[in-house]
Length: 144
Image 1: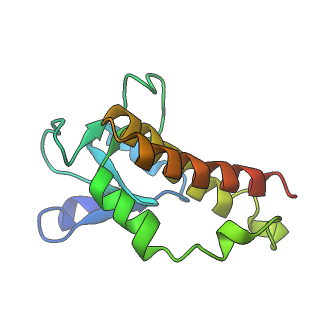
Image 2 (image 1 turned 120 degrees about the vertical axis):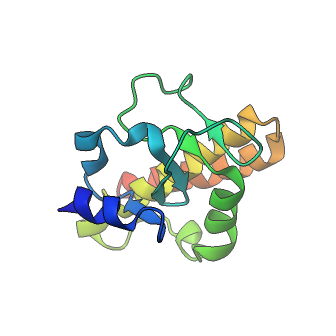
């Protein structure tokens, strides 16, 4: 059913897969057509090419089951300006045990991928900030 919905929607409206969802895209071999946008993956109809707006991290993650394409500008904007996580970046311990292994993990992955993307693009200061945030979320995964 997910495949049918995505297929009918593509072209009319954007199709996103949540980073927290199980990788259903793998069933239909959609991974090469997914681009990270913050905490989600956008399905792109057509070939993807490296540009200022798209970075492929396949060399850095050759065996990854996760999508390796990242939209650095869109992801940076979402992670820094849209997702309001300043309070989370002040936490010493994740407050809710039932979500400790999922929510901090998704933020960790998004920031770590963004850091690597910034590094590949040669923007060291932005990479350091993304890694700083990723490391904080990694600590929150540990439970304090």
